[in-house]
Image (cartoon, rainbow, N blue to C red; front, side):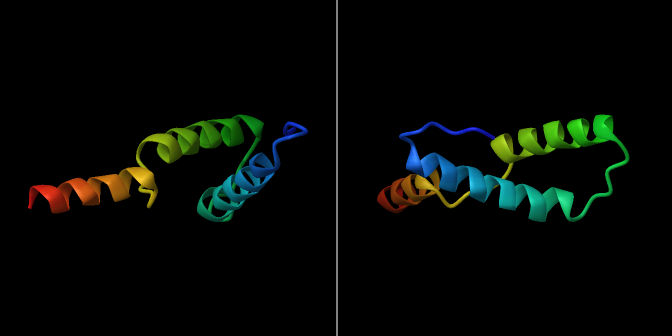
Length: 70
């Protein structure tokens, strides 16, 4: 995977994503061929981007709104 020359944070983000991919998908699944691998990667990408819980800015903002409303 290529990253930009003057983008030092991109390399760290990419390394973190690859580690997550390995631990959550590739270490737990036996891939039969390239087609199976591509399908599994596509499914994991959709899961990662849509359904996976994160503790990022959005969740902190939601907690702030809940405290203000409560």
